[in-house]
Length: 269
Image (cartoon, helix red, strand yellow):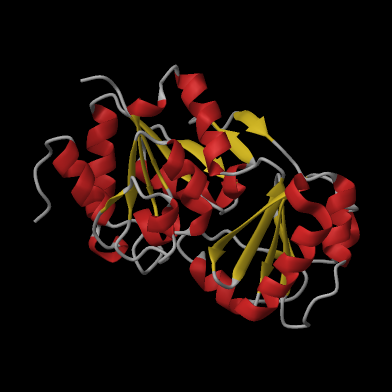
C-alpha cells in the first residue's frame, strides 16, 4: 500500500475527554507507523506541549503546532515558522479588553499569559507544559507565533470584530473553542502548514487523511484527500467542509476506530 500521511488535531479529536491519549489510540498509531505510514499532530497547542504526546507514542511524528505557525520534523528540527509582524503583535497586546479576558502569547520556546488562569493548567496536566505569568510587552512583540484571547464568548467575539475591521487579511483569526480566539499571521493555519508537510514528504493531497473537530481545523480538512469530522465537532464545521466524512466521538476513540477500519487492522474491543 502507498504510504499515507495521517494528520490529526489533538483536543476534541485524537485525545479523550481527559485530554490524554487512550491506549487503543497509541496502539493504533504505532501499528500504522510500523506499516510505513507517516503521522502528524496538528494543534493550536505549543510545540513543547505536543512533544510529550509524541514521546508517549515512541514513533516518528511530525508536529504542526500553534495552529500552523510552526512545523517540526520527528527529530525536532524546525521545518518552517511564521511569526506575527512585531508591530501587529504590539497592537494586539495593547488592545483594550474585558479584565477577565486573558491574553496569551505563544513564542518559539514558551507560553506567556498576563495573569493566572488555573483552569488552563488542568488542560495540560498530562504533559506538564504550562504558562509563565509575565507582562506581555516584555518581548516587545518579537517572535510571537500566536496571540490567544481566552474569555467569555461574547467578549472575544467583540475583540474579533474590532481586529477584523482594523487588519483584515493581514491576520488569520480562528477559534479552537468558543472561548478561545486565536490569531496568527495572515495565511497561517493548519492547512498551509499541512501543504508544506506534504511537499516535504513528496505526497499529494490524495495521500492524506485528516481528522478534526473545531473551526481551526477547517483549512486542514479542506486540503486533505480524506477528511473526517468528529461526532462531537463544532456544529458549523461539517458545513464548512461538506465533503468530510462524519466519524465517532473523540471520547470513544473515534479516530482509532476509523483508522483500524480504513487500514484493515483488528477492530477495537
